[in-house]
Image 1 (cartoon, rainbow, N blue to C red):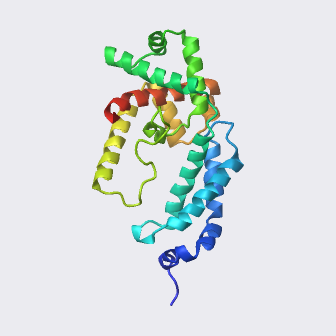
Image 2 (cartoon, rainbow, N blue to C red):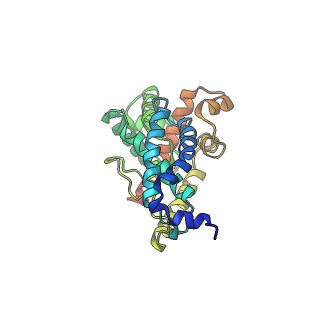
Image 3 (cartoon, rainbow, N blue to C red):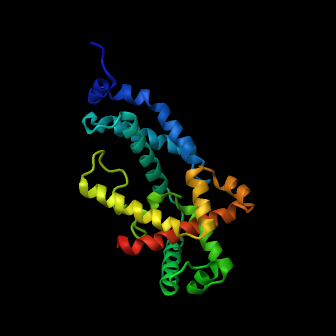
Length: 245
């Protein structure tokens, strides 16, 4: 009788090498997609190497009874391994991360007082710095952070995930409720972002444009797009964090 794909995957524990060889191209595809959306210091070869480790781990741990195909499961593990490697290689000094937390807190304080979105000038004033210095802080934060909604679940102090971003293939009811609640709050927070920040996020995540391409669409520099993206991320963190806490 001819083996089905499911039967082949069920044999995965004794066929790791074949699974890795068959899906090696998936690692390169994910790496090329990610490298165009990450800071310029990230090397493609580093992503591929970490992605191969993720693929090896996927081949060892895959369980077909969970219901997902191996390619789906491996894709999650590969991308997670790549992003974890980028986080581990974060070159930014502690002061940059500290300033990012200060910005998020300043945004939260201003918006709590005025019950409306905080402007660049108001945030700078809350921080006690000039607007130009505030923009420099945004650029620094943008250079050391991944522009990913997964980052909203990263503890700013420890760098650890508040909840696993790559959980089991079949989470229980409680996990489904938590994820659905977070997604609903995130969608609402995005909907209430300033128009330009919302547009930049849409171009980046929905249209999958890189920062340079977004700058060309908006008629601004890539640096300015980076500032807007960083501010949008920190504003979302400020608005979501009180509930998460």
